[in-house]
Structures are given as structure tokens and as C-alpha cells.
Length: 327
Image 1 (cartoon, rainbow, N blue to C red):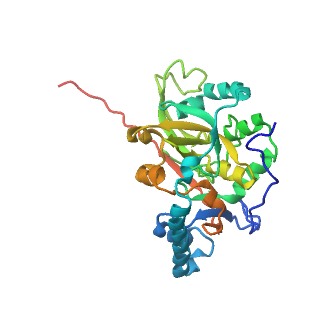
Image 2 (image 1 turned 30 degrees about the vertical axis):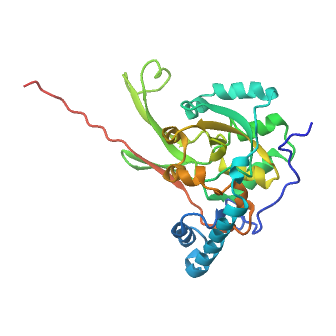
Image 3 (image 1 turned 90 degrees about the vertical axis):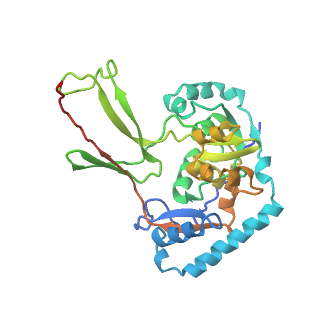
């Protein structure tokens, strides 16, 4: 049987030989950026602050490039109007029902998709609406190489919706007696919500004395499942951009995705990214919004070497203990 996602031979898109970690020892990262998207100021700041050598690049030249891509998007509004609404999606393969059941039992999954109806679908990559306008090319290429060009349905499912993953390195520094800084090169690095643990959850935790409760903040990563939001006939990619880009780079046409179903604006607040929430009409109603295929259009996409960036999380612990006296 031929699967709709069957890949052709791998394509190496690293035209400049750049990779995460700096193949040349510089630490440079190869970043693909979509020109012509809101806003021009963001594009200029990106070049000035993050692109290696960008501070000496003529801003007028960058503006001209951005304008050309922006004009192209206007043309695409006519020639490809409604393309995002024709995305081809297939329901869960019955042979993968066991994998899907184990996925849905996972605590990471349950906490990520606990408030909206969802389905697990095989979605067409090219026509996914995108709100994130940059991806790291070198990282994406490496993770696709691990998958291989002809995975089984189960291998592709686990790649798109992994329960086990290799975590990026994390550096921890104590800044003072009550301040800690955590850093990681991963853009997925974050602090989770504070948690209050009480007995019997404290069983097995080594504590300096009898404890009534333990309040803590975990620092780490998101669940990182490939996920999207569907509004009517349009599917907007939410999480898993590097994985989706990696699959498309390798010639894959479809990927397994958790698709949450949104029917009104209030529901969108529960799941959508800040970019989509900031301009829902653009992503959900525009005749021709940016789609994943645009990352592979040389008229729009620009590959540049960028400076290495770390995501930082600082945690400060403040405890106030007082007594009160009845008056």
C-alpha cells in the first residue's frame, strides 16, 4: 500500500552549509524567515539584532526585498485565493488506534488538550496556515534525517506525536541566595505553572523536616506535539513548526497532527498563539494567508545565518513569615 505521506529522496536545503551549533565553529544558526509578512519593522530588527553581519546591511535594500515579497503576497491573494481552505486531511488510520490510545493516556497530552474537542488527523503540510514566520533550518534537517525517507505509519506517528524526546541542554545558575537562572538554546524552553504538593504527593521527597506542603515551579519544555487549530475549513499550525518544516524539507506531503476544533472566538482564546489572537481575521479569513509552503518559495523565504540565542527563565523565591496578635 502507498501512503499519502510517502517521501521522495531527501533534499538538503542548507545551501550555506550552516547548522545549529555552527559547523564553522562560530555557533551560527541557519534561520529561514518569511519576508513580506507583518511587520516590516520586525524584519529590519531581526536583521539588525540577530543576523550575523546584519548591522552593516543597508536597510533600504532589506526594505526593498520585503516590499517585493509583500507585493507577491498581494498577487497570491488573486492567483491562490482560498488555497488554505482546500487542505486535504485524513482521519486516524485504524491500525494506529493503539498508538493513539497510549498517546491520549499520557499526562503531557491530557494537560495540553483538555478543554477543546480534537481529532488526530493526517494533514496536508503545504496548506497549513502559519503564524510563526521563522524556523531553524539546521535543526529541522537533523531531526528529519533521524526519521529516514520511508518510515512506517507507526514511525511517522511517533515522530509527529512523540511521547519520548531528546531534550535540549539546560544550564542552571544560582544568582543569589533566592534567585536562580535557567537557560537553554531551545525556543521551547519555559516555566510551567506553579504547583502545590501535599501529602501523600510528598512521599519519597527528602525534606529537612516535617512538611505540610511543597510549592514549586517546574522549568522545562512544552509537550511539543504537532498540533493545529481548525476553524471551518482552515487549519492553523500551532505547535511543531520545526517538525513540520523538517518533514516538508524531506519531501513528505502529510503529517499526523492533533487538530483542535474551534467554532467561536472565545474558544480560540484557549488554544491559539498570540499572533493568531492578535489578528484572527488575517489567519482565519484572509483570501491567502501565509502557509507552510511559503518557507520553500525563494521569492518569499530568506535563509540567513543568525547569532546563537538562549531562552532564559529566572526564578526568585520570596518567603515572608510573620506572627499576628489578637487586639
